[in-house]
Length: 442
Image 1 (cartoon, rainbow, N blue to C red):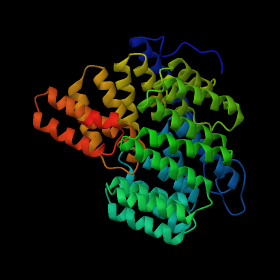
Image 2 (image 1 turned 60 degrees about the vertical axis):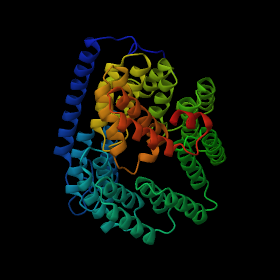
Image 3 (image 1 turned 90 degrees about the vertical axis):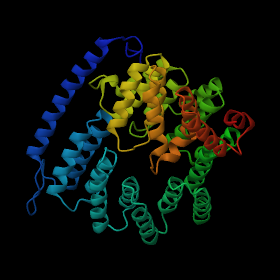
Image 4 (image 1 turned 180 degrees about the vertical axis):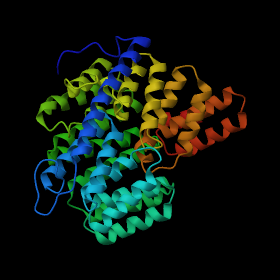
C-alpha cells in the first residue's frame, strides 16, 4: 500500500465537490476523444484483410472489447463502453462475446433490461450453449417482472446445459424472489445432488444457506456456514475467492455480532496472505474490501485500498462515476459522520446501476443519519416493495432492519396500525431467530 493521500476524510464542504466535478469532466472529455478515435477507426474487415483498426481480426476485436470493459469497470464510464460495444456489434453482428458484454452492461444500467434481454436472445441464437447469455436473459426477464419468462428461460438453459450449475442457482434466486422458501431449499438440494464433487458449488451453497440464516436472524448458524465456505475456498486455492469468502464472513460478524475486532483481524490476515500484487487487478475485489473496512470503522484503510488500486489514473478515485466507487465512498462518508455526502453518493450509486434494490438500504440509513426521516421512510418502503433476483444478497442485512425502522418511523408519525403491522411482519420473519433477535421483534 502506498502512503495515504489527502482525500475524502480531510476534505469538507463545496471544495471537494468542485474538485470532483472538474476532475470528472476533464477525464470524461479525454475518454470522449478516445472513443471518437475508436469509432472512426473501427470498421469490418474486407476479404482476407487484417491489421490495426480492422475488427475482423480476433486480436483487434478482443482489444476493443477489453477497452470497453476497462471503461465500464475501472473508470465507470458505462455510457462510453456501451457506445463502443454498439459500434462493434454493428460492425460484427455475430460477435457473441460482444453481444453478451453489451447485454450485461445494459442489464446493469437503469431501465435497459428489455434491450438487454433482446441481446442475450441474439447471442443464444448464435451460440445456444453460451452460459453467460442464458444467465443474463434469466436475470433481465426477472427484473422486467416477467416471472414466467424467466422460469421458461431457466428451463431452456437447464435442458441445453444440464452440466452447468447456473440453472440451479437461478432456480434458487427466482424462488427466493417469489418468496417461496421451500422451493429455495429444494433448489439447493438439487444443486448439491447434481454436482456432489464440485467445490465451487459446495462453497456457493454454504454461503447461500448462510444468507438465509441471517435473513431468519440466526447469525451463529450463518457464521458456521461462512466458515464452511471459506474452508472450501482455501482448499480450492483461488486467492480472489478466498478474499471474498473471508470478507463475506467478516461483514456478517461486524453487522450482526458486533465482533468488529475479530472481523478486521480476519480480513487483515487474509489480505496479508493474498496481497494486491499477488493476482490480476481484475480479480482483486477491491471495492468489496474497501466497503468492509468502511463498515468496520476503518475508513483510512478503506481509502488506502481504493487509492492503491487506482494508482495514478485520473480522475481521483473519489470523483469517478463508477457506481460501485460511489458505494464505497458513501460508506466512508457515513463512517466519518458526513451523512449528506453519503446520501449524495448513495443516490449516484442507486441511479447508476440496474439493480433496483442494491443501494436502498445504505441510502435509507444515510437519510436517517442526515436527519431526514420522511425520505428515509419512503426508501425503506421501496426496499420492501422491490422484486429482484439479487434480493438474497441484501436481505440478510436489510430486510429485518427495514421492517424494524419502518415500525419505528410509522409509530413516530402517528401511524400506529401500520407500525403494528410491520412489527408483526418482523416477528414472523424472526420467529425462529436467536433469542436476541426474537426480543427485538416483540
